[in-house]
Length: 473
Image 1: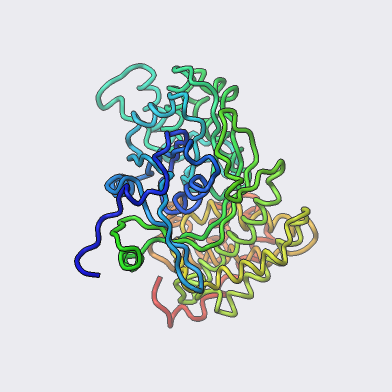
Image 2: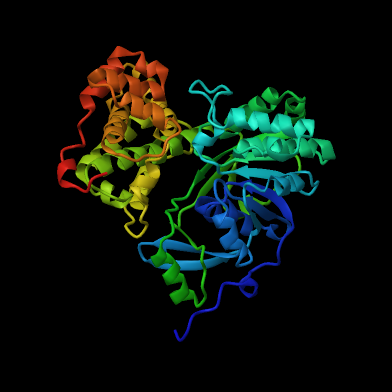
């Protein structure tokens, strides 16, 4: 290629720019590889544009806006890569632009709000109830109260969390009379629609302006199960797009060819025909959620902690380690005892996961998966462990996931977790007291069961044999 290739621009767009009818919170790689892909491939895609807001930083919105919100999706299989320009996101905005968020939600044309804000961002307590003391919630309530009283200046700072911003925007929708809409969580949570409902109604109720009653009457909360491995984009990925496609794209997304989306719930103001792109709409989503949360996400957690303790960097590397592979298979055996719904085909699903995880061309970094362990393990390890114990089995496969996390929490200096300070405090303890304190951050029930605490404590150290000879965490 002679000279620098041109920047990705409107001339490459496959469809005219659609009107904004979906607002998304959590503009990141997964949203762009999953919900945005399904929306582009819906039969009525020309009617459904997405306005996507970033989370903590504006960088992704700025980069996308500079190229008219177009980006390249690279589907990476063992046999090679394919490239597609995605144009379903028609506006990318800084998450801190709460004024624009309120404007969009106050518009009657907006029918759906989708969320990929991470499991930890819902801020519920370990028992699933709204937690007014969760990080950021108290600040949000002060900001919401200031907004309601018409304060200006520093006192009128906008809510800082995605849910705080959404609650304020829902109040603007109520005031505008724009009518009902659907809130669709696409985060890896069991019954994620109900989780979103409890978190949003909890914050709205604590605000105390009557908004919670309006939300109950006018917002539906749709539960989903989402699945597509989407690693972080690298400089090499950007260079490959320039070489293979002949244009510069600052924001490509790499994903595996596999994708899955299961939805359950009502859309009072309509939705795209996502089923045209392969999405599945069901009445009972729980069996699909559990299959994905336990078999895929649960094994990801095992590989993230055990794999790093044994010196591995990616899912494919960790799966190739027989010790890690056995831990995954043992946990899958336990989870399969509690996955019986018709159509789940657990043996085929497990085999497909082995093939997907073994795709070495998808560099899914274990450090990325390891984040927010206290939140993730509460949904991935604890339910299977509890079900196994209730069935008269010991649940050692599930307990080993917790033990791997405890060893990882003690071996790494830097980790991302909503309870990071509490983890550091627990790490100051020793022996079984440390184990119990760390388990309590995941689930008080398991921490109060001496049999579980003893079992987890005995399993600690299982994956540390190679740690001294491997790269420090």
